[in-house]
Image (cartoon, rainbow, N blue to C red; front, side, top):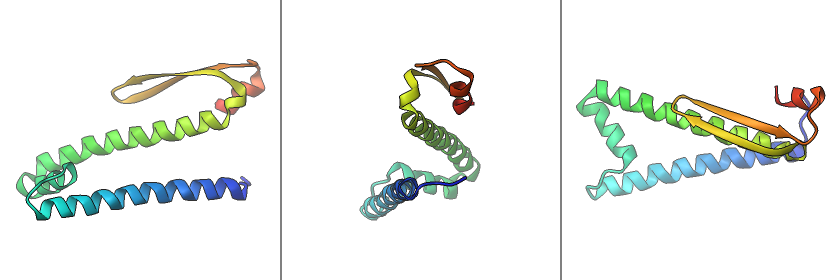
Length: 116
């Protein structure tokens, strides 16, 4: 698959944005924990030490939510990149899945294939 330099630059920027947000959250949690306030992140880490099983379960739930968010963001990005083919896109969100309905401007096999 050949990708344009612009696409790679956009992808790299997106990765850097996510890493910057994570870095900021870790730094903020460390500062708050230092003064005795637990953020969600610090509480989750503390949970591993006080009740490891519950901590792992919370981590699992959080990971599932994060993966769902990332998949949703990637899908939205993909749909936006194909907006010239789409009239509307609908999201039906359920607990463990993301379902999208897409209405194409020109409903042909070739246009459908882009999304399959």
